[in-house]
Length: 213
Ligand code: DX5
Ligand code: ZN
Image 1: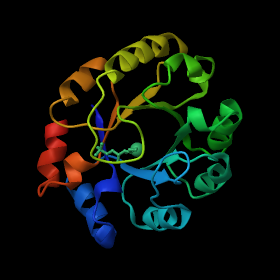
Image 2: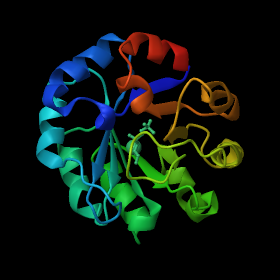
Image 3: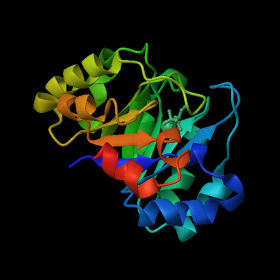
């Protein structure tokens, strides 16, 4: 069954603990944390001290999505804090293999994120080393953007490669996910759906999460 990962990017930051407790109660499987540095993407969010505090109160696994130019600087610390899933961008790191193994040595599920225009072929040589791939279905940087249907073909093709190279690979899709595209995304083979505005900009989190399943 597909896992639903609410992105706190669209939550009320002044009541973050309450928001996290509310999505947990509403049936969220994973909490998605978007780290933006104002350099790799044209926006700033939050960094390590806030992730550490969220880890202390969260009852479900954390998924840290690093949209930063220098991801290598944070991987060991995230491992030390026992973060469950961590992804960084193919476009931001020259030494994918090395950094993936830094995560794995720290027992973190290791993922590579791909922007909409980045082909999946760029990560095929290291597909066997990955726990998951995050396919962006918007250009990273902001919540509430329109879904890019080009991701369907990427999911299907990645799934085909994974059958031979890494059958346990999880495929995560992030950006513009809502009740209009959840069915087609699941048919295409997605394992984890990230949703920010669709969940947090509603008054009934439980109904939104159920509609995505
Ligand atoms: C975008 C972030 C997403 C974002 C998704 O750069 O990586 O995780 O929060 O938000 P929605 O679901 O509103 O597109
Ligand atoms: Zn994200």
